[in-house]
Amino acid sequence: MSFSRHSRRQPSNLLQTTEGLFTAIQTKGSYLCVGLDPDPELIPAAFGEGVEGMEAFCKDIVSATHHVAVAYKPNLAFFEQYGAEGWAALERVVDSISSDVLVIADAKRGDIGNTATRYARAMFVGLGADAVTVAPYMGRDSVEPFTAFQDRWTILLALTSNQSAEDFEFHGTNPLFKEVLMQSQTFSGSERLMYVVGATRPSMLRDIREMVPNAFLLVPGVGAQGGNVSNVAKYGMNRHCGLLVNSSRGILYAAGPQASREEALLAAKKAAEELAAQMLETLEIGGIR
Image (cartoon, rainbow, N blue to C red):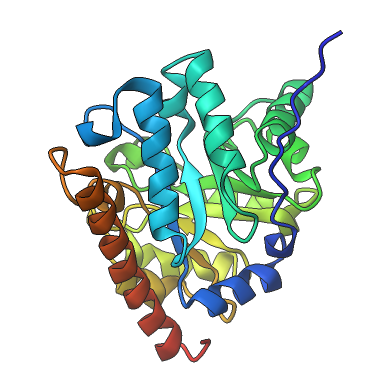
């Protein structure tokens, strides 16, 4: 008989409360989330090819940025494209990340009932992630199987950073993204919810923060997509910071595809530190550092 996988990684139990995550942010003076999107067309050739190159690249990026990152967000699609070998590499990458930072599985799962429960188990138990992104559009019973897992975060898509978000997320007398924010607060385990809110629409963060004053927001879109830290902090920060700002391409590929391994990691480290310095400034301005 075969059994489902149990990750060897110890969960980030201290970071599974708002207070614990805030303490980690204060300690590092940063609320940086580094997105691990290992694009084979952009990874410098010096890291190698295929799955081996992707795995080496991700592990080295983590080592180069760990001192300023409070979270890492592997995007599962970049690993899944390689099939079983890619998934095995993802497991090894996650297993290698220490428990003093969050691992967010960027999976965007969204199904109901026992299917959602198995998705949640795969992410939280099998992969060892501390959080997972979830599409909430099938309603309560597509979310609560995730929030049923104690000491784990569920991160709902709300107002995403892509241009086509307007196709659906803004529809309705009360826009769909606002319905997601309001309705989800009534779900079981709602205290374990975060929300994806794109940095490309910073002025809307004020309204979102009023709707979910205490929730953490995972904010993509800084850097390559045009968002910036100061605007995100201006409109989205709360007394516990309440922000995890993600940067992927701007850190991962800061040196370009022709860079040597050393050049690539030095550039990634510098890009992460520059973002962290901006974050520290906003924490100090907000009087919470």
